[in-house]
Image (cartoon, rainbow, N blue to C red; front, top):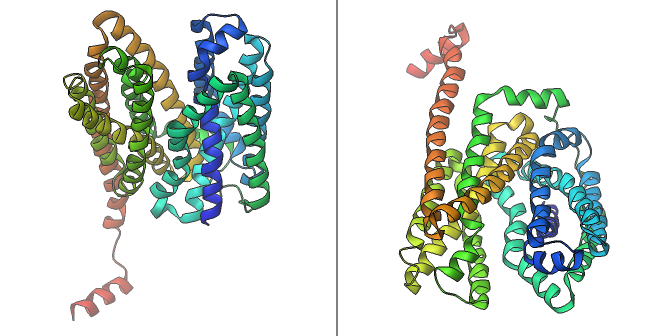
Length: 407
């Protein structure tokens, strides 16, 4: 069952590169489309909030369909959208080219994670999700920088042409080699899945992801600016530093996938503390090369781990509707990304770049409070489930068993 998961990971690489590559293309794209960079930047906001607003409902609707058909259709949609982006004559057409794939991204990511878990079993859920998410990590390490290099050499439209070709090619590979995976037996109807929202613990898990991603992107959104203005790096060094930051995330991907299977909430708390430590250490060590490298490495490892940990943790919180839970996590994470970017910008305007670590840590502290509440709530729920069994009267058969055991 390794090949299907690898195919999903490769498809995830293309999909996540499509989402984030626009960040590196904004200046050239804005000039070509006749808008300023701030207006072009709204395309990033459009994508993120479309994912957040539509993800749970579109995933719930698609969860009952055969998975192979959904995955191939999603890649085909990305192919068409990237081709449209490469051709777009104005920002309105580009907006459509960004809106359409944003509808498909949460469906693909949620159902691919759920499918990977169904292929390996729930005991290895974290590792399965980390294998699928490996494509996401590689997209941040290689996909986005390579896309920017293609744009620098041949123009920003060429980057979308390459993504369109990759999308159609991977749709073909999924069609050819992906086994026919049925819909989840536990998906249930749309109303059944939506009833999962009545569970306060599941809502708490989504809130925890939202806070973690808010803290994460309060600082990460402005990492390049911090390296340039605080550390004094030139553009080339900033680029290599960003690539190294993503590369160490491969370590976090592995650690997060293993630890979340042991203690989902505990892993979230641990990596949140580690990320806060890296954030707090960065500014004091910004002019100490070794210290700065260690702070960035700690931050990068913890951040990458939290991508996996949060996703698997929310899915484990609703095993009866895992794909729907995954879509809720994606929505919460995207809201956190948007709120974190806005909060970080406000902190910079008010207190300066050097205060970003403190602000991000404050948000992560709130996340730890929610994590502690979830731990207590989970223990109470587990105790409530076992209490009725403990109060059940002993049957004659059980008494005979006990007597035999005592003898």
